[in-house]
Image 1 (cartoon, rainbow, N blue to C red):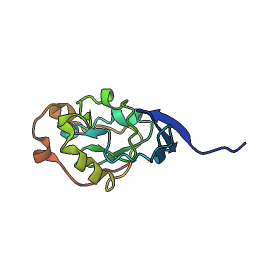
Image 2 (cartoon, helix red, strand yellow; image 1 turned 90 degrees about the horizontal axis):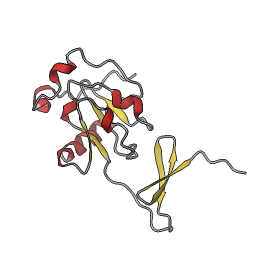
Image 3 (cartoon, rainbow, N blue to C red; image 1 turned 60 degrees about the horizontal axis):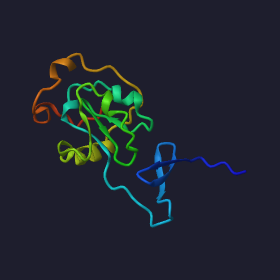
Length: 151
């Protein structure tokens, strides 16, 4: 018997071989042409800026969160569309990519996920996080492209 370092998941009638947290070949059940996913399924929006509670990081099964100085982002190639992070976010900063609010944040998440360090454990949120929860125009006021401290 041969052991494979994969587990197979079925989402939206597509079978995915998932090795650790990285995706491998994606094929449909009827051996059709490979399906590639070009955009992420969940996006972190500006509501995370200056809040950064990190409850979402603890529940993510594939560790696809990356930490900036004052916000988190989701890596597009690592997110498996499980949706467990969305209800865990206190400022409701995580939305599916089908949400109109997510459109401008798709590129921000993709760009900074490759520049910032991966985070797999919940850290300490900023002391003034509750004061910034629900504030408008946080991207223009507070966004920092600097990477976070990681783990």
